[in-house]
Length: 280
Image (cartoon, rainbow, N blue to C red):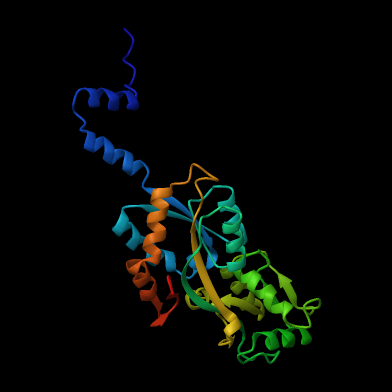
């Protein structure tokens, strides 16, 4: 006699539902549960600063929605969202974000929070960069042929760095010490700490960075170092598979009163890493 085949799961659900053992409400809950996760394409700075580890559990408590973050350079994160491989985009390159919206991949961009970029380097500061003028500092790095580690990964930080170099008269010749690592913020800082190099970093990742060795903040306070983050729901018109309802809940929460309060509450050593400014 042949052994009975396992009853297929879908058939079992249908059978029990037909038998009245599954209520419509329970089936509805199961359907909601199956949809209760989203993918957020974001920049490495939001992850490596520790913000998402602090923020996302609070969002899960409020919504029941799980968030999978794919942390890349901003350029790569935008490309991922353009392909429809993410539901939400959360990055920090306003020019590229505005183009993302203009090209129809999101209906709108909303500002979420800001911090700033800082120039990190050896405490001895051999190139003499210390101060509050990022353009003057980069000129000195180039003139001294000082080691400088660029992310070189089309991230928001890399885009900002390139803007600053263009403001100098040394953009075509950044010095023999200039190197691109093609890596995230944490790895770039690790290279800087092991080689005594200068690195442009976002303050959030720097504050959460443990392997500092001889590195310190040398240039800060220049208004050009302002670092704004934006969030966008990927367009379902472009990509029908986007989880619009769940993604919108995330956007609404992170730009709303509750999410903004959580962002403001994230501190390391008593220092606030990000400053919420949605709707301002």
